[in-house]
Image (cartoon, rainbow, N blue to C red; front, side, top):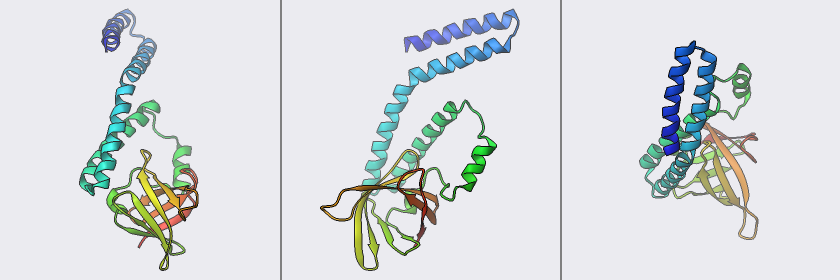
Length: 202
């Protein structure tokens, strides 16, 4: 933190010098960029530790059935991740091309789902296979009256749901990703960037 304080004092002195000289905004922009980079280097480790602890607390609340607490913690995680993304993009608005690509993607939707959308609920594929999500982070897929697979789910910082599934005790675990478009529609697939099958709320 001594380095951080030194940078702040140095920055103030240099800004005054530049402003007094000729008000050159180019020099100011360079200084501002350097300052922001220094702040990021100093604060990133602390922020990352905070996010890890927040995720642990959120998962603990979810397993305990404290959905209100889990949603409060998740809101803080979302806010932190938005701040990080905002800083990384240099506070620039998304390009028209990026906006068009997102609009063309049928799986695009809510960045972070609410736990009440799926915890304790049943969702269906277009083929009517049921996905049942329990509050303890487990679940099962059922087709008709037959259990197809059991799985464990967890909410990722990106807002996607990672599902680790086993069709039988002697079968390997497979991973599927799920993202909610809204409270009544979701998409799933083999990766976060390949979500091509639809789920809808029962």
